Length: 80
Image (cartoon, rainbow, N blue to C red; front, side, top):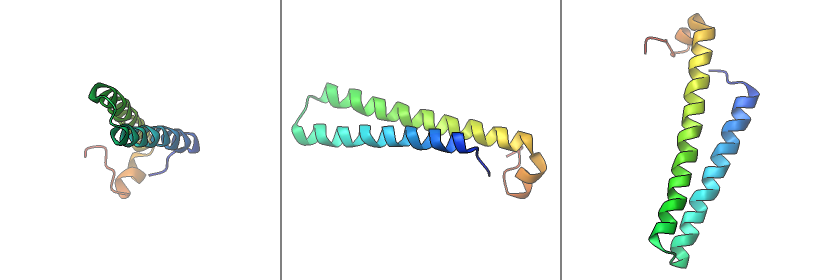
C-alpha cells in the first residue's frame, strides 16, 4: 500500500504525540500523581492513537478504492 507523504508525516506526528503522552503517564506514575490526573493523560494518549488509526484506515481505503486491481493484487481487496 502506498500512502501519500503528507499522510505518513501526519501519522508520525500523531504517533510522536501519543508517545510523549505515554511517557508522561509513566512519569506521573513514578511521581505518585493522583490517579485522576494519570487517567486524564492516559485518555489523551488513547485518543491520539485512535486518531492515528483512523487516519491510517481512511488512507488505506482511499488507496484501495483509487486502484482496486492493484490493491487486490497486493492483498488488500476491497471485499476484505
